Amino acid sequence: MRKFLVVLDDSRECLNAMRFAAMRAAHTGAGVAILSVIPPEEFNHWIGVGEVMREEARERIHAHFEVFAKWMRDKQNVDPELVIREGQPVDEIIAQVQDDPSIGVLVLGAGTGRKGPGPLVTQLTKTAGSLPIPITIVPGDLSKEKLEAIT
Image (tube, rainbow, N blue to C red):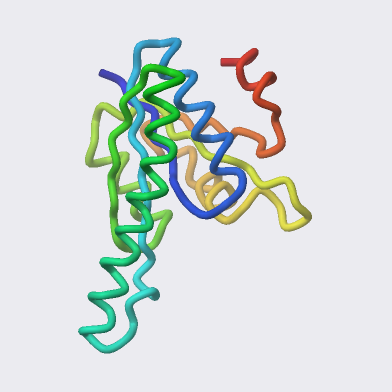
């Protein structure tokens, strides 16, 4: 089954990317893989403290994932899978695309502020030509109604 890969992070635009991926998956009979990347700088502490912080990060990710997963199951009849990787976000996104041949589309949310679309969109669009899949960039300020209309 083809899957949409969407990145779970703390950005506001993540919400619209999640919605888009779930709605497209529901309309096309695809699946959704939700990727969360834990950057290595979060654990540059003593070994014991780093392990506790790593576990806390994983717990936060699971809690955040469950909110999106419940909505996807209840509203879109899509049962997403969670993937957690550790490393630099762009490197780990590319690695996940390469490691999972069922991923057919990468879905990213674009920020709407003055700072631009966000670091993931900026960095990944520079390498888009070498990715084996297309990238869909979802504007962060699209309404639910507009998302429903285009999916």
